Amino acid sequence: MNIRIIAVGKLKEKYLEMGINEYLKRLQTYAKVEIVEVKEESFSEPLSEKSSQQILEREGKRILDAIPEKYYVIALDRLGKQQTSEELSNILQELAVYGQGNIALIIGGSLGLSSAVLEKADLKLSFSKFTFPHQLMRLILVEQIYRALTIIRGEKYHK
Image (cartoon, rainbow, N blue to C red):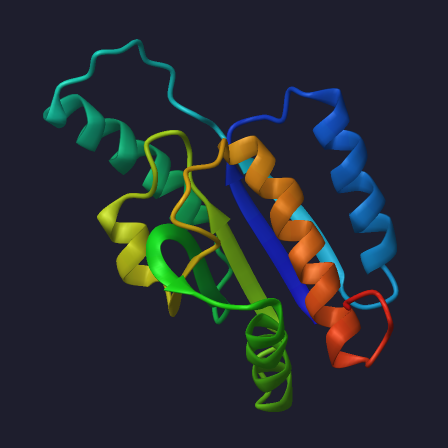
């Protein structure tokens, strides 16, 4: 399985980087997982609706350019469908069984994702109705990928 996490912006917090690296190391025996960072637009608030849309469109173009052809695209969006860890593992397992082992997971910037990225998504996934910092979502996402893959293998990580 090839998993590409496409995330807007650079990771700045060392503790998040350490946690992400730990899960990436653990994931090496299950799948090839890479994180691709795309440039985050800088802005100061308050933003007009037009300015917000322009920022989302520019970030969205970079995200779309980073999605390889024939990848199954999962966009993290707070309005998406909420799944349990078991349901996520079922989704990943079904994709692999049906020959779709190439998956791109998208984490937007602080303004979210453009409509073009959401339209490209095969699945819109919500981790919670809460809003999380997009850098923290990287850690949560790699942990959940690890959890899902251990569930598939019947390992004891998930209780």
